Length: 455
Image 1 (cartoon, rainbow, N blue to C red):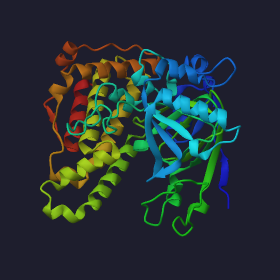
Image 2 (image 1 turned 30 degrees about the horizontal axis):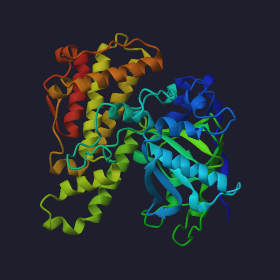
Image 3 (image 1 turned 60 degrees about the horizontal axis):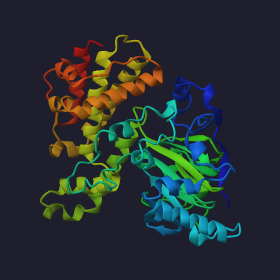
């Protein structure tokens, strides 16, 4: 029995949509959409495509060939994903061209290598391959990672360690026939994917149906929706109703939070992909982190009585599996709360669009903090202590505030004053809450600061 297709993802001209329309129709409703017309001025669309209309693979070898990248072997499953191999971009391009010239138009399953998760923008910041469309600028994840590490455990904070990932802006490259197994995105983030070259076929399953691709115990999900899916293991799979989409060159697809998807490259393909989250889906991030925490606890429950620091071990395992632990996430939302308050203090018109967004951000941070305070792990130990004074006196925080202000100014075409370290040190909006250790502290701090801001 084939997939049950319930419809296609909507396509719209991105030039005819403003940010408020995007929020109202897609972002706030958590609905996928494909945009056309947003890549016309991208350097990538010129440099990465040859005059004959084919991918300019030699350009990558010549300019970025020494980069070390992760390449997926699409023919080999390893646990819940495809086997990964590390190689240079030059070696990957050589393999691609060799395989393409020898397959006589037929795809050899044994040679399907797919370059994934290349941190291209971080590695080559002076080469501006593209401009992030306005719809996706409110990107808390990458704004934060431009200034801070997500995870600061000295034992795991290595330059290329996935836990302290430098950013979530990627380039993907693969020959016709390469593919990505069924999954929901990291952190249950939003994502967007732009085809610089080639065509992709997407299959989407809404969050309300995700249980249909899991086993009876909600532990294991289907790997390949076109593979031999065991009915006894995944009894609900045939009930799932999918959306499909053929993504053409120069189109950008928005993938909402929690939507499972499987993607196939119909042609040789080069794409640009971002994972991101903001106030509209930050609660999804906490919900996933909490579920993975309880799984981490369950895996080692039998050693609780003999472990000197059971909770610490659970948090360490959580960071290894999820990319962050409770301390990391709490630090993340606290810094965002501080930055939003700084920007709000500087807004002269409380009714402007930027001010409304800042209030919305703080409201959702408070909502997540309320959910966090009910978790027993916060009641058993001090997860972290965040000094308000030390935070605002850190030059990285000044740069973080200014980057956020610049982003929101661009989104709404409103002016925003750039903060200096001296100005932040003189702000009198933080009251007596000098240390934030638990969600209750954060809630009280934001309430007090809003009163002092006078907004």
